Amino acid sequence: MPAANRIHDTLIVGAGFTGLGSAIKLKKAGIDDIVIVERGTAVGGTWRDNTYPGVACDIPSLLYSYSFVKNPSWSRAYPSGAEIREHIEDMTDAHGLRPLIRFNTEITGLTFDEGRGVWTASTRRRRKFQARTVVLASGPLADHAWPDIRGIDTYRGRKIHSADWDHDYDVTGKRVAVIGTGASAVQIVPELVRKAAFVKVFQRTPGWVLPRLDVPMPGPVQTLFAAVPAAQELARQALYWGHEASATALVWDTPLTGLVARLGKAHLRAQVKDPWLRRQLTPDFTPGCKRMLISSDYYPALQRDNCKLITWPIATLSPAGIRTSDGIEHHLDAIVFATGYDVHLTGPPFPVTGLDGRSLQQEWADHAEAYKSASAHGYPNLFFMTGPNSGPGHNSLLVYVEGQIDYAVRAITTILEQNLRYLDVRAQAQARYNARLQQRLTKTTWMSGCSSWYLTADGFNASMYPGFATQYLRQMRRFRSADFDAVAHETRPRAVTSTG
Ligand code: NAP
Image 1: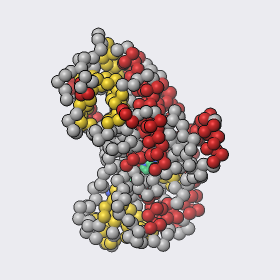
Image 2: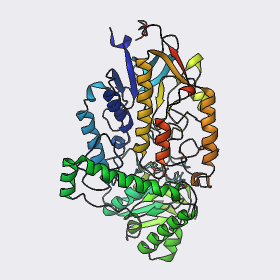
Image 3: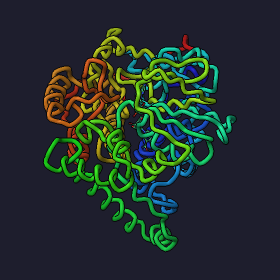
Image 4: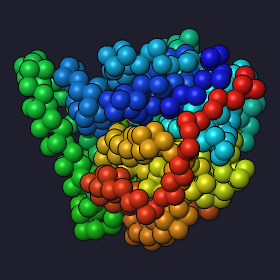
């Protein structure tokens, strides 16, 4: 059968951590007819794209990795982005995933054929893929965005985005600005100050910074982890429960939140002696509302002779640099935009057409909502990774992704084994789930008044899960058949020969 007419059991969109993890678990469940489409030329997703100096994960890798793909050789508690990417490459090879991946394949639309129970994906190069089930693992932070700053197109120096680092440009001896002071910036600034003539950091909102307790992984520990995987699992569990405990301070505003604020201020006092600079760096929002910043070298970097924190608002970019609202023009050779992403809070960046021609883009235009973050009514046999309200503020994203993968594998196995045309979550079940979720969200720190990428422009929270990871995992494990409509096939789906 020509490739375009073949109906795969599962199509996975994206060969980042989540797409690859899904493939591993599907294969373990005996589902081998998988195709993974990836718009880039290599695996790794955000860890392939983010190569800025200093890139690392702010969650220890023993926890920021899959429990089912153990790596005993992490070099340190917080390894570099390059090491994480290498791990993803190794995982791809170790699990035989490479032959399943179609690189350079960007999906431009997904349509469900209710009669056949088949999803058809079209691609930018006009190819077609058909599959009975789809895992959407394209990630919410896959596209970076230039900020909407006046004059940005007039600037004549080098513009570099943190998520698309320009390695051809050598910052040595250059006058460099960094706009933004979020999770990316606090990793970039300490590296830039080592090489640049000077670095000016343009801060709009100071964040809460806690120290990063990074240590090299001793050789004997690596040997122990390799010989006794249970020992590594024990270390992972210790980290998991430590992070779980932090939810009581970061997810909800409790007396422990005050303790985190005191810790943050103590860290600031210990590292910054100048009272004026300290004042400029003191946050004025509840810890946890924006992502916590984990760094032990950001404050020291800001105090180097060749670094300066600028807190005057940016008025405009000019051909020569940045003009701030105090009237000063900062002349610069390069500007680093550590200003974040074009976050996909409203679904994947391509049209998804479900039952009766309904459009996910239209339905989610204002507010995305899903059932348990992983399914949406009217879009059967489709499973979201890092979907609406799936994010943690206190634990490893991959812990949550494992719950999503298990949910998707269970549903996909059901569809295939019971030869279902489709499995669709019921509208009432989804509405009930979200009413409760949004009500629980009102009590969280994310809704306490700061601005963050977690919220849409009108303040709706479609990104975070208001609870412990343990609660999230429990709900993902519990399958309520009453919440779904299951529609059977009389025969296996027919291939249509008109496609491709
Ligand atoms: P971000 O958290 O959205 O931070 C963007 C920064 O740019 C903020 O300081 C923001 O200021 C500033 N900014 C944006 N537009 C601006 C403008 N027009 N003028 C001046 N300042 C502007 O972006 P990010 O640091 O790239 O991080 C995004 C997410 O990526 C994180 O939350 C995290 O999920 C992920 N990440 C993770 C790691 C990790 O180690 N795991 C590392 C990096 C990133 P305001 O605060 O005032 O808006």
